[in-house]
Picture 1 (cartoon, rainbow, N blue to C red):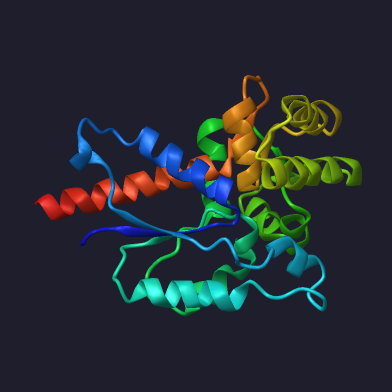
Picture 2: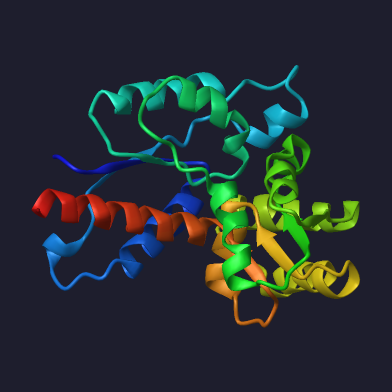
Length: 240
């Protein structure tokens, strides 16, 4: 197979399934051959990213298996990598250093979408795993773009972890009331002009329990759109 991209997934599997579902759903296809060429690596046994970032002395690092995945897949010649796990972007620079194949930067894509979709936004809220909150990957991107970041309170952060881990990861379940409650607090209590959904399990919640008017930027959705844009571009180049 030529002119394809590789998805390094499995972090978690339901979130990766959501990414692939959106990818295929949004691809303008009328027959089998119109869909995109990609390889999916569902590496479910990669150690938990948040556990390592928050307590590295007592938890295994996800970096070695992710580096191995990138190096193995690079030998096959993908045009780019998609990494549908926000917290894993803590290792972005190390992963990019082991390959010449570009890795899409999901947090950067999410922040870059704010100006287009919410041009008057100034205060950008973030809901994510505690690992992503601690590693501050989004903090830098948001600050560099000229926005003020709104962090969740400890209570909101705990509720978000419950939504992610006790709901989606453990039971493949989304509690719509909890999800909407979190968004309500970020917007109406903390004053966020827009809220970034900085975890792919939260993207699962958005997909299944959206139906709201809160201003959000779904990081996974932005990754899907950029994946399609680049894949369609390389297919056109192949055809010409």
